[in-house]
Structure formats: structure tokens, C-alpha cells
Amino acid sequence: MATEHARQKATRGTTVGVVTILCAAWMLAGGPTSRAQAPPAYRVDPFWPKPLPHKWIMQQVPTLAVGPDDHVWVFNRSRQIRPDENGASTNPPRTDCCIAGPSILEFDPEGNLVQGWGGPGYVPGWPGEQTINVDRDGNVWISGTGRGDSILKFSRDGTLLKDFGHRPPAPTGQTPPPLVENNQQTEVFVSGVAGFDFDEDARELYVADTEFINKRILVFDMNTGAFKRGWGGKGVPLGEIPNERVPPYDTSGPPPDIKEFNVLHCIHLSNDGLVYVCDRGNDRVQVFTKQGRYVTQFWIHTSTPARGSECGGPGSDKYGPCGTVFNLAFSPAPQQNFVFVADGANDKVWIVNRKSGMTVGSIGDNGRMAGQFHFIDGVAADSKGNIYTGEVETGKRIQKFVPLSGARR
Image (cartoon, rainbow, N blue to C red):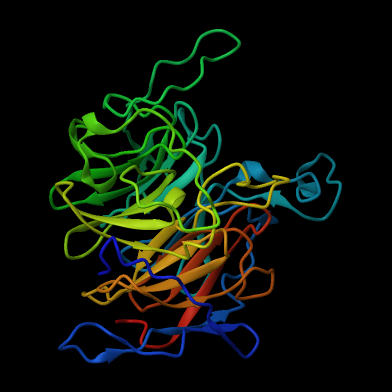
């Protein structure tokens, strides 16, 4: 992979046909003794998934996950439905369609809806929808980034199995006190959980803590919830993480190479035991051992502003979202040769060679046609090399991209 001094700027993909965005036209050597390896290429399946039943309509999809049976689990922000979308929910119905679908949607590989359940009020502590994951037993885990949110574990049919807890005391009074950054305390999630993943053999839960407050990785016992270890950017100990926000920078150049994380957005474990962290506010992915030793980092399209006053978000009158690393997924071969990075600012899936850390191609572009994205936030891959994406803001959809070549590498 690229060292921290070798920042690689991404290049735009080449459009083929109407909806297929292929990778860059060069070949990338995996090492001095490796054969040159072309990046995989994809086409969108415009008929996946199939229409939802019961007049349900999809809403924002911040994340999605693929289970051990290749079923796709989608976190659907049902509370984001607009008045012009839910006319069928009134009594009497104002329009023929629609009704907000459940917050958890399960699809089979052909795009058929298997089931839907969950949503605000479904169980006590239902979080503001942010991250969904599925363990090897088919259990569904979810988290949110709201004040008081934690991680909940369900059976695949929606039975609550575990509330992970670690919530701060509920605020009292009409005006809650402001949230205070404290990277040294490990008892509570100050403002929910941005992302999480499992090491099921070791029974450990890895947490990217709080999207906009703290800036650290925490590891807990999956069964007991006991804290085990944690670290900050570049692997610094928790005690050395400053409790101040990361300052803006001059966006005419790339983000500075600093230690601190900023706007953590995901965490994923690779097959070879490395921990990949989405450091969205620095346009980079950092990689660690499971014990928190810093290994390397790679950069994603550093000409895109990562933080500062010009950064907006859904509904903002500023330029739009900042940062390029919203989520990531690995290609399905045992070596996981490629990393697919969802970039919500550029509305692309960047294809990165996992060994070198170089961006070698992309899928999609900003737009609303099949194969394009508007505010992509989630990405996942199944065992056959298909890629699934989720969009928030007004994108409100999932898409499937089918491999043309090389996608199982």
C-alpha cells in the first residue's frame, strides 16, 4: 500500500455506453514480482431491486450490508419521507401512493423483498439510522449517531436480542447541555456510533466513535460490552488525543497529513486481520492492526475539500458535503485485492488497489440516471463480486452493479 508520503490523486473513469462506468485504462502492477492487474469493471442493473409491495417507498439509505447468504440488508431512514411522498398514509388517502417502508429491508440476490421490519418506536432506544451490519449467524446489528444512540442486535426476523448500552445519562431540562468531546472516557458513546464491525472469532466489536464529536476507535467485548482497548489517528493512545476539533485548512491544496481523525464514518476488518477506518474529514483511509498499531494510509481525491466553512450537507445552501471517504467495501476474493470507496462529495465509487493504495478507477458520477449517484453514502459487495450502493439526501435508493470482468479478485 502507499506510504503516508505518497498521496495519489484519483482520475476520472471513462463512460462506456449509457450507464456503465469502466475503470481507468491503465494496468497497475501489484509489486515487483507480480503480474500487472487490471481493475474490475461493472454495469448497473437498472431493474434491481424489484418494486416494493404495500405501496412502500424507499427513503435515505446511509448503509447497507450483505449477509452470509448474499442477502442484502438495507437501513432505510423511513422518517425522512416528505409530505409529497406519503399521500397514501393519510385517512382517507390523499393520493394513490405512497407509505414509508420499514427501516430494515431484506432483499434476496434477485432483488425480491424478503421482509421488512423496524423503525422509530419499534423497540426502546431505536437509533437514528446510520449503520447496519450482519454477523455470520445472520443476526442484524444497527447503530445511530444521535444523542443517546447505541448499538442494537436483532435476530433476522426482528426480535431484539441485545442492547449494547454505553449511553450517557439522559439530559434534564428543556435545553440539553452542549456535547463535550472527551476521547479519554470509554464508558459511554457521547453521540452514538458512526460505524462498527466485528471480529467474531475473538468476540470483539470495533467502533468508530461518534461522527462529529470524538475521534477514536474503541474495541469492546461482543458478549459483555466490556471495554478492551482504543486508539486515535496514526495509532496514538487515547490519552494523547486532543479534545478540540480539528481546524479547517487551506482547501487550495490537499489536506495536511495530521495524526488526528476527523469525521469518522466507517470501520471494516479485512480477511488478513487489518482494520480499515474511513477518515472522511481528512480524505483518507487509515489502516491498523487489530491491536491499534498504525500500518499505512491512502488518500482519496485530495482536491476535494475535506472540512471547513464551505462544507454543507443534505438541504444545505453551501456547496455540498465535504470529504471523500464515506464508506468502503472489499472485493470478495480471499485476498481482497480491491477496496471500493463510496465518495458522497464526488458521487463516485473509487476503486483502490488494496496492496498499493492507488486509485485505479471509478464507478458512477453525480446524477439521477441509472448508474449515477446523488449523495452516495453506503457501499457493500457480495460473494459473486456484485456491488450495492445506497444514497441519502434526495437520492433515496439502492443500486446494484454487476461485474463485467475481474470483480472477484
